[in-house]
Length: 490
Image (tube, rainbow, N blue to C red; front, side):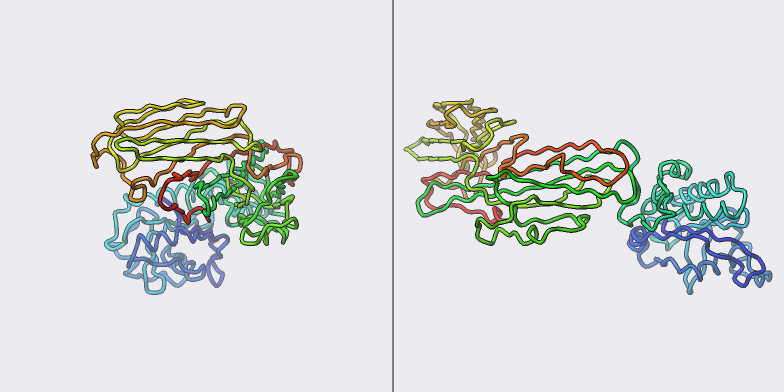
C-alpha cells in the first residue's frame, strides 16, 4: 500500500502545452518494489513532460483531441472510476489515479503488489484507495481558506515538507495535511537548510538525549605454560536524540580516567560530520605505548530520528576482569573438578548477575554429585549434564572463590545429552556470564555536562554504561591441546 509517484498539474487551456506540472514527487524505494512485483509487466514512471501529455490526452483536455479515438473513446473504455491507463512510449502505465478540480489535476500511481498481466481487479489494488485519500487530502489543504494565487504558491512550496510527514517513502500515514502542517517547522522554506532524504520527518516534543555505552569482554584462559591467555573489549555507543528542528547538531565526548585503556579501531555512524585524525588512526594492530591517543574522543553529528549506534571501538585492557582456573580429571568412573575464580581488584564488585556454567559434553546424565563451594550456590541439571554456579551480585572481601567436587554419569543417550565434537575426553571448559551496571572495563564514560546540543530548547541529558561478558571461556588446564577461536578478534 504505497504510491510510486504524485503530481499536481495546473490545467491551462490556450497555452502551448495546455498544462504545467506544479509539483511532482517520485519514490525510488517504491519503484524498486514495483519492478520486483510487476516483473515482465513493469512499466517505469515517465518524466514529467511525457506524463503530462499522456494524461491530458486521456482526460480529453488537449485542443486537438476532439475527434473520436477508439483506443480512448470506445464503449469498452467507458471510465467511471477516475483510474486510467496512460500510453507512454508504446507501453501502458496502469493504474493512474487522476481527477480535475478547480483547474488543478491531481494524479498518482499506486503500487500494485503483483504482476499486471493479466490486469488484476481494481478492487484488489489497495493502493488505489490510499491514492484517492492522499489526493483528496492535498486538495483540501490547497483550497481550504485559499484566497489568491500567492496563498496557493505558498502552500505548494510547503508540500515537499508536508509529504515527508504525511507520506514518507510513499506510504500514506496521514492524509490530513493540516495535521502535518501543525507539526512541521517551515523555517526551511525561507532558509537554505534542506530536509535530508534519509530523514523523513522531524521530532516535535520534549527535547532529550540518551547515551548508552555497552562494553563486551571476551576471554580465553588456559592456565598453561607457553600458551598465552587472550582477552578483548568491544564497545558500542548507542544514542537516541529527540530534538526539534530539521538538522540539529550534537557533539558527544567520550572520556577516560587517568589509568583508562585507550580506545582503538573506532568505527563511526555515517551521521558523524568530522573526526580528529588521531581517533581514526588508533589501531589495535599497532603496539601500545605512552603516546597513544587517550581522548577526549569528540563526535559531532546530526542525529537521525531513531536510536542508532554512534560508534564501535575495541581496547586492549591490561587484565581480564575475572581470572580463572579450571581443572577436570577423569578418575575411573568419576570426574573430579576444581574451579578457582578471582575478581581483579580494579573491577567494580557489584554485579547485576554472575554465573559460571560448567557443561559436560558427550556423557550421560549426572547420577551422583559431591561438591564443596566457598561461595554462592550450585544448581544441577542432571539430564542436561550441566552445573550452574550462581555466584550472585558480589564476590567476598577476599575477591576469591572456589568450587570442587566429584561427578558420576549414567549411560549415554545421544538423543538427550549434549554433544560437542570439540569437547571430547578432558577437553572441557567453564563459561562465565555476568553483567555490571554503571561500569566499563576501559573506564570510558560520556560526560553529561560536556554534551553540546545546537537545537531549540534545553534537552534532558542521560548517560548509562554497562559491562557484559561475551564468549568468556576458561578451559581445562589438563586438556591435551588448547582450543582457540578466531572469533575473539573482530
